Length: 100
Image (tube, rainbow, N blue to C red; front, top):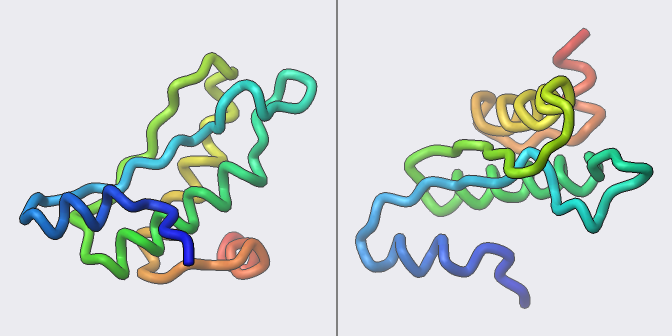
């Protein structure tokens, strides 16, 4: 068994109010032709949102630490919104259906 976000529960168990804070971009080592790896990024956001809901987190804030063009931020922001505001984790296909 692997706990992807071990410190979330650690601080929650100590009585702290915990927020999830995934990155809208992965690290620049995992890029393709200078572009972020959005498949990995979106999966990380989905899993962190699910962990936050199941563990009773206080909320979620998506961050960005890398110098990619500002326009590419929208994908991480949309992923965060879809997986936090709707109250459940959506598959990419379910997300596509909500946009139509």
